[in-house]
Image: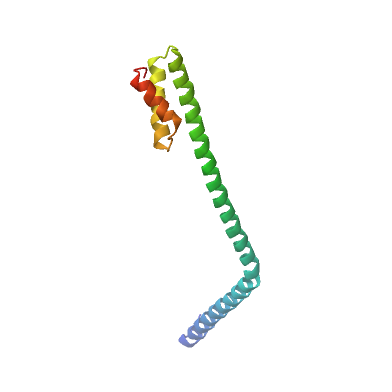
Length: 129
């Protein structure tokens, strides 16, 4: 322990700092080399994911259009069935009427505009609705 001097401590600290700096430089060099090697692989993967994302978006949009169309047709089918029952004089309960008006409002809000509205107005004017 008597040989411990400031010179010895200073030399060892310089050695440790130099070693740490060297190891860090080696780490950075290896990291850069690996990134450069794999850049092409990652680029093709990135491009593939970009294409897949575009396809999924287009598919979602097409599916949304189909769902909207199905919604319109389902509303129209229910309304036509209900209006037919009313016109034929079938017994309609109050909950059925409430459900009809909910569905009819939805049909109008999603852009339904056809013979259904004319039929509805005709039955309403006759006092059947």
